[in-house]
Image (cartoon, rainbow, N blue to C red; front, side, top):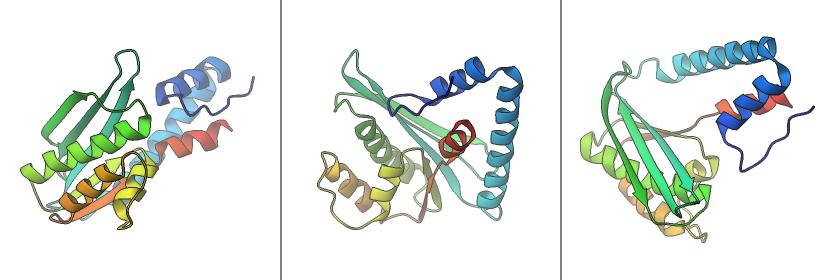
Length: 173
């Protein structure tokens, strides 16, 4: 059985699908490759990052209660935990909405804690691209991007898209 990409499918569903349909041996190979890619990526991105703080951003949709969850974790260059935030909000029912709100909340949280040398990392390429441009976004969350960009302008930041999902796609297709 071939695996397919479903935009509503989460990473855990993909991992489960790999294990269920391809077996333990294939799953182990995928896990080793993903870990290797992740390790090389982190080594390349975070070398000479003394004084930088990494902020992981994530959003989730809870359709059954019509809310989105947003969260962020801040770590220093040694990976030591500095702080975290999470919040359940009533806003939209779209994954991009949740990720956009998560980015805004994480930016506000992180800039309050350590306003300089921030690396923001998220898994929604639309949100990262929207934060990196100065053009107004006319989507439903365009105003969220504008507020987030104005707050980012006060800090020294680096925006990254986690490409782990892209590697999984390449391995299973």
